[in-house]
Length: 124
Image 1 (cartoon, helix red, strand yellow):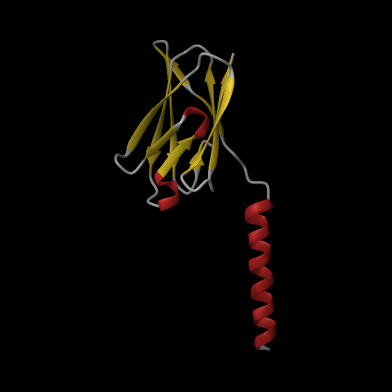
Image 2 (cartoon, rainbow, N blue to C red; image 1 turned 120 degrees about the horizontal axis):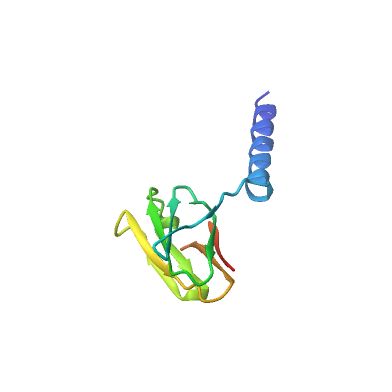
């Protein structure tokens, strides 16, 4: 009987791991708000990034704020490898990062351990 319980729990855990890593998860996409020829948006850091995809308008100066709601060590940093940015999000509740919008492109970002990911898209 004990073997059946252990087998059932093991199969349940394997199914959960497969769903977690390979299942399709809903990702939020948001457009930045433009005001006074400046665009600004907030990404909430809480067990991941929300929204995980942010769309910016090309040619309008942009500032993205990361609101830290999670004390997990992995999410304590946000890294924009393409921009050479590695910011510690634990120093303040809200950390602002200026994103260049001079050309249509995409900027991928990740946590310090490269486990959680997001994307900023600059569009015409």
